[in-house]
Image (tube, rainbow, N blue to C red):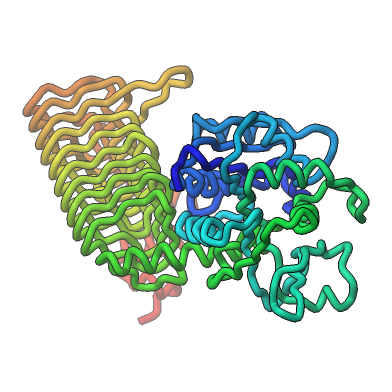
Length: 484
């Protein structure tokens, strides 16, 4: 079918009260993409001449997301008359003179793929139908409009659940809410639809009766995979669909050469990119625009959002956002990578280390128990355990510059802004407030002073005092009565 003869209408006006959420239903995320984003992507794959999205509830929020995902889409506001029939009627008014084929999609049916819609379009064209719709057979059809067929198996009507008889409620084949219409037949049918039903709405499904009465051909085509048309009305369904989509994403990466050790505990967004021979260990979440290069190992128990991980790197038990990890580098366990972290090739961010807006050069190491914020570390440097980069003066943030091949002592505090020159050393326990020239040793620890007898004078009668006394007399610290 030529794209110039195709228009796609997306229904996104509903409030979605069963979600019980301040967030509009169609904006809830699924695998890193809002529900409506999945539907807009499917629409674009069909290469239609027109994409029309009908909005109402939280109109501006929804419109912003629609525009971000599909700038070419036409936005139409639904008026006070409720119902999907009215929504499509308004969409057609935005396409004056269009007499091609209209595909109607629901913004809360995110798993539907373009291949399934194309197959529906082909069936519609070959049969010369006025209406072709997708149906699905569910074990529990509750909530769906039932597909009523005659004794010959041919389509007769769609009955909404609240208007269905007891016999009709027993039907397991339901309307999937995905339609292909001939535009002229659709316009004529919508003109004759009223609101004489339990919901007092203008149902799009009632268009089927008008088309049939006018002699138009109608066919209901059952989908082979019911998940593709699973709608989302509440958070239970959102969770169910999320698990199913994630299982398909994980399987796809496995077939592409990625080792996923435990698919059930691994979550990967649609927007993530993984190379061959990546290994993903249990309890890992890869979110956003995260990219992992070949041979890297991620996990276990790791969450990465919008991160770049280089070839052969290892990231375990780590939480990272907007971080870049170089090839062959090592991160974790129990590392916290905040935005702006860059670790060079072969570098290390170790156990209980937090980094933020920090650039750590090739081969440099921050092994453990440190905070590196607003800093630059050159190549081949080693930051001692328990080091703090004191970047905040109470008003402003300042940077610390650490040169290449610097060795800093344990339990240092670098009070920014300062610079530590190439090849410099700092002594353990130092609070460094002044810049250190290259090749120098910075140390500011006062000479140790031992005050003899302090415990006996200031803590008499304590276990410490008794132990000290026994040690001074050469006795057993555990024997306080002097007996052998």
